Length: 107
Length: 124
Image (cartoon, rainbow over all chains, first blue to last red):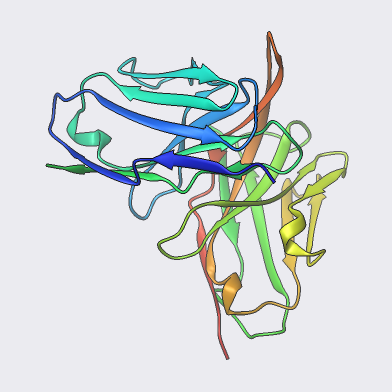
């Protein structure tokens, strides 16, 4: 299995802050990496696919970068509706796996 | 607007079989791939498997062959059977659409549409 490790597990930030979440794969996964946002009691929502491509309708303050084993999700200016848990996911091999999640909380 | 809706019992006894159905509205199930994903309370997401509308499947080996995913194109739905359940199978179960997208480095799959999720508790 390809293990996905996110850091940090949680962070506190203020509205307007720039936030960066990292995701590391246990082996190279090229750019087969997606990011999701999940709010309490709701299904996850696709933000970014293929490491850096913004899903239609997602605000441009979200961006993704990286390749190989290391990836980053950046929120350029945190908004109140962005407080949520974020997950990375790889689809490089036939067993798709998620990271453990990063919870973004209000400072 | 394409929507997915899970349905099935919210309570299953240990050693029995969990059965869930995901119904698609606003589109046809006869394209794309369709997945089941679960999330135990307070824990991370776990992909269980997917089915293509033709019936080809791919499963997470961690389920040790307990899972079966099937599709009924006439009813525009797909289903999950999970046998020999234990308390460890207690989770919110989601269905989702996998969309393949061509990129410069290959075909990338992502879950772009999700059902609202259904909580399944395994308990006697």
